[in-house]
Image (cartoon, rainbow, N blue to C red; front, side):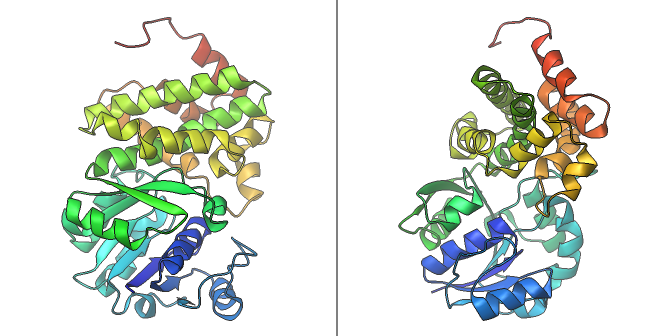
Length: 333
């Protein structure tokens, strides 16, 4: 049994806590709202995000980050990506100096264009051998139902990745390891933006041809940016790239695809945001991904069009039409 802290009691943080509980670990969770913490402690259930899912008796929750972080061996961060910096400014001093830090987040920070692992390193001073990323086709509700799933644990130190792999391997959750943190984070981030575009096409009533076209060209855009940033191309054809992209773009459980569908049906960004408590990371990260691509001189038209859509500068119909009407060119060059 290891001592974990999971900071973030949303759907994915709670589902990963369930995995850790199944693996036999002791988990302290931090929740932003006391009501969520009380439900976890008293009912063994996160009634707001994963109702009906029973958490292990080894799981406790608190709104006090100092209590949650005290004497923890592994710290798992599962907050919205654009809130990571402000949270870590409060939490960093309480993270044990030798604890491993695991990011479940999928985003690029606005303004700095930093990946989540880079923000963690900046705020905590942790070296690459203490920072890991978990990413893959991991829809929270399916994980919570213990349906079969695979994921990727990425860390620059292969032995640390393997150590974490062993710690979160259960009968239904199979982790693989890589050392390509850049590719793992890019795949997890860009797929949210592509998922929005696919959702728009679905919301407009387009069929499988349109969806498959956007998914495939979205992967091509991700691969171009990954190559420019030094990612291993094999990462983006694996679970953290293609696998996560397909799950996000194909499943009605995906909050990014669902958000895009609602836009395609005529709702505004503000209306969709107001209709749900869940956060679609692609809405926030699309602009930072576009800026990051521009800094590397990488063409990412789907991402750029999603930015224009979110800003209200383009309609859903224009987004799809402009992608199709772009200048014809070789598929691979």
